[in-house]
Figure 1 (spheres, rainbow, N blue to C red):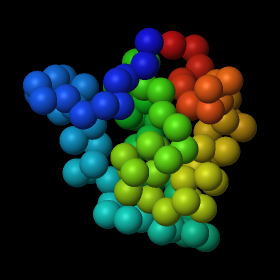
Figure 2: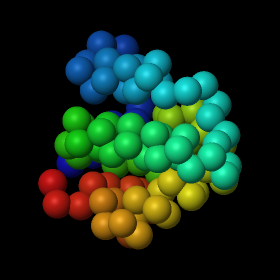
Figure 3: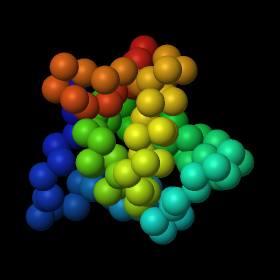
Figure 4: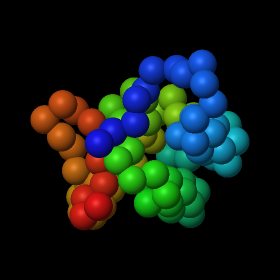
Length: 99
């Protein structure tokens, strides 16, 4: 089960949760070599996947949701896949393993 990425006219719990994520993450984070900053964003992303079972995002959706640049988003998703926390599906979405 994934979240519907289409905008909703009705305020759902998922919509409210995504709005909270946007407010919590730094605006247009571009951390590059800043390992502490990278670890902080990775912790926040892990927490969001834990709090929203069924979250399924493409790279573009993740980049937009978390307000991060493409290189950081790629590095982050690759790291979370390599660590066994996320998996990339055949539909090019990222989901949490072991829900």
